[in-house]
Image 1 (cartoon, rainbow, N blue to C red):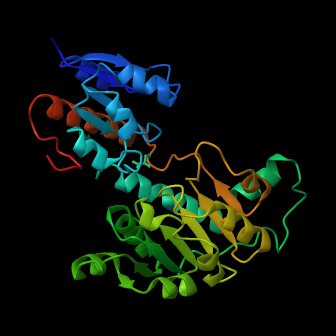
Image 2: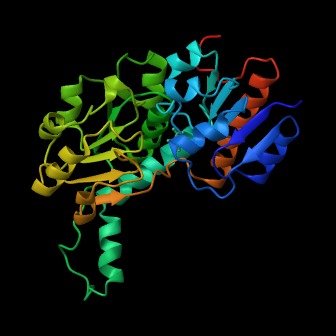
Length: 321
Ligand code: DGY
């Protein structure tokens, strides 16, 4: 009997074919997310689950899925998976690091430029038929070149963002739980500063840390108050790292100039306050979404699954085994 694997969302045909060589695969090609009850029911007889960040794997689910041996996330972030519960239940958990760094870094730059130069606001004005000619003071934005870029988290994606800043001749400062190795700082031309220094000095603050209880509301009311009124905030990491209500208040009051956001608390529900603001650029969690990268992510997750269920150590195992 071949192991049974559930794929919780639509994937590329090649990924489906690859997994079908090894397993009896059930795939949700309709792409509608399963509610928690349906997910448990569908997983109760499966050995493997190829999941996305909207599928929550916790102790309650694991206790009802006794056959489960592997949960393979199609994402580098894995805050949807309770790793301790997986370890206790002898379930391997994997993620997809490395393959999305450049693409996510590129998109961070799309947000930086669009927010600094008020691109979506200007486009809406044009589309609404409001443009009646060139004006000297129209849509005055923030210069990105030679500005100070403040990066929270100089991990793989933070480093990509920093290296792209060299082309804009920016000053790059960063803060992290640990200082990076000298060769990384040198390659990124980035200087380590305290959290307070970063908040006070950066013209552009961009976040590249994983979500955890320790990073929950890393940027809240107090942090926003420490930023300059001309600062813009960028978040392409995870919802919950920024306190969305505090950010909306800061954007309303003008205590910071703007924000570019790809991630939100309670996705896919959006705090309606964002929609009333002009000084925010919004995207539906697509920073890693280039055709090539999403394919690589899904294929890497599938390779992790094959390794896990054929007696090998998956390349991206997250928990001890
Ligand atoms: C990740 O890999 O964690 C991304 O957020 C998914 O796009």
